[in-house]
Image 1: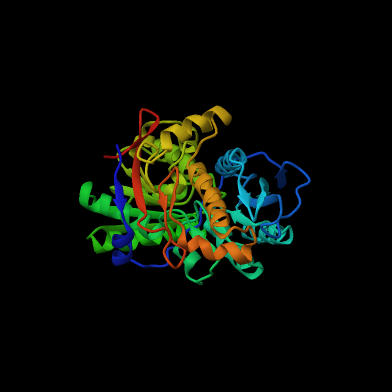
Image 2: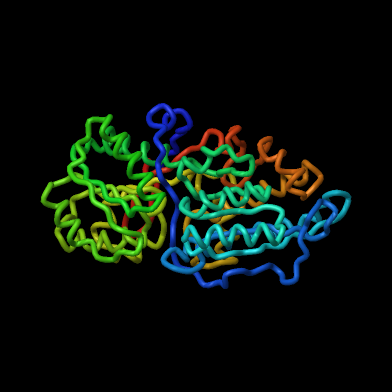
Length: 400
């Protein structure tokens, strides 16, 4: 089972630290820019019959699997919207997706954002990672296009106060502190080592975890760092092993966490718990870790509810699997809802012109697949929850 923690208050009260959190990276295949279908005229206003919505995620590199899952969620939303015969501004409209690859790289992310601005898309869903979403958010603000991230969790994202920026899940203040509470209060752990991958996401969630754990009386016995491209962790794990920790917290992605678990097992660290945020809480970690004994020590957290607890999660997942078998990771239902939230605001404004409908997004009250979406004045999701998971018998399992 799982815990759905209503962390709106706890995270804020415990630590409003600026957790650097970006979100993830994994494997994918599509080209850098793909419209569905081709030759789509830009929707400059609600009078247009074709409305283009942008999506950005890493479709190449180590996080491509997550990126492709996100894009699948957007494509599924576009397909479903186009069955509804929606009218905006007195005309029937058709939605088209313009997909961009940011490779989880901040420079490529801002370039992709500018490309979507130049294409005059009506809105953007993305990016996946905090490290790309944060710099891209300024680009979207400057060109006046709203964007909703389904997965970037660094609290710094909403600090500039851009009226074009929205987030559809809990940020890292909730994830990092929730994991620390569980480690200290439920598992009664006393000594924990912390590793991060130096990305905005990894450093951020690790910092929140560490600071919260210390307030709970946990001793941080070692702090190490690596990169989001590394594969050999023997040196840092050997150093950590000498400190006899009860657990290791890793701030980063499954592309490093999986090999790290393999190497912990090789070092005989099979009784050491392994904590991490949503970056490690996917299906890829099963394969990358070799599904060994160390995988069973994983405790990870995601923003939002488990599929079983989402209002429409299980039925939606069946449809997703039929369209994209074997590709589900984490965030595609949030991407799906984010796409619908943009269109819901267009419908209420009776316009697809960003200058007109963006003002309607803060008034959103949309019953989605993941939750009923409402936003705080700063663009954060109202009343976000988090869910805790482990891996049993090689399968991701909610923690009761």
